Image (tube, rainbow, N blue to C red; front, side, top):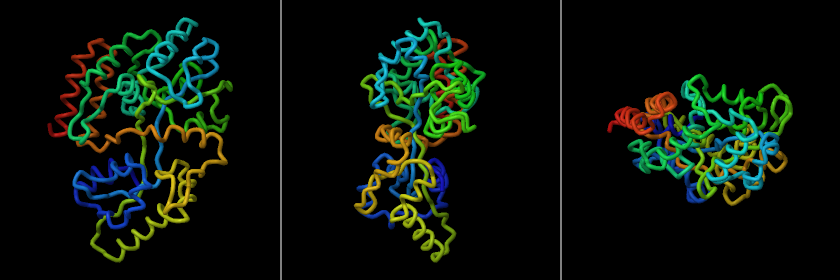
Amino acid sequence: MEGPERLVANWGRKGYMVDLSSIVDDDDSKEIYDSVMSACTDTDGKIYEYPLVMTAHCMAVNLDKFKAAGADQYLDLETHTWTTENFKNAVAALVANGDANVGAIYCAGQGGDQGTRAIVNNMYGGTFTTADHTAYTWDDAANIQALKELYDMEGINFDPSLVGGDEINLFYNETLDMAFCWNIAQQLNPASADTGAGKTISGQEIAFMSFPSQDGKSKLCGGIWGFGIFDNGDAGRIAAAQEFIKYMCDSEATTDAVKAANYFAVRESVDGADISGIWADNEIMSEYNVLMPYLGDYYQVTAGWADARTAWWNMLQQVGTTGDVDASVAEFLAQANAAAGN
């Protein structure tokens, strides 16, 4: 059980995995979200992962602090979305209220780097890779604009001493007003110390939010987990593994499997049976489910991914140090594309 970046783009592409196309029937193709199925399918059309669960990474805000600054007016707490303009207005309101550390562009390493990519890509609709996942596209004019605005934005600070986990801790203890590294695991238990779901260390309310975009409809980075089969040449074992996968992901047992994983189903029905109410009895999980349709391109399957991640946070460090966005992007984008074979 793994994600497409390993099962598909790494082991599958190297010929280690069994093509699962034969157990993905017409109903599966209709029921599994297109963005998920695309990520589980290699460029040659072979399916190396049968998906079970997913999540969408998002950001979070300290709602009490937003209310104190009058910045809550810029949040749509029904859909958990906001526009880029409202994001900028909210940051300005928090700064005006005396908060110098509204948010941090953390870049000490790759931990939580999906958050920094998401804030940059979504502000003006930039892309991280080409649609066919053959090259990195950080020099997209939309990304350049976002990076420059974030660098110039009072209250948003580039911090090379922090990774995503550090940012979460600073947000949780109310040093920061917002966090770009967030998902359902943090919302359920921010401190991992059983001190209350959706609350800061002193009990202030945490609201999860989609990343800001011009129209309020962001494209979220996500995690996908499913099953693959290593091809050991044993037809009997492969058949047994396929039966196990169908039982877990495409049967009456799927609801229990999803609940055991504590994430979200990659489909709303199984062979026509509605499973969309899996989390109806859990208020936080049910509410968080509003973000699932915003899952964007699963670009982690692009060649040279490990090197590209390193180049990304090194680029953010250089931007924070020099303020020269254009030169920094050009330098580190070249490194990422070289790793991708371009």
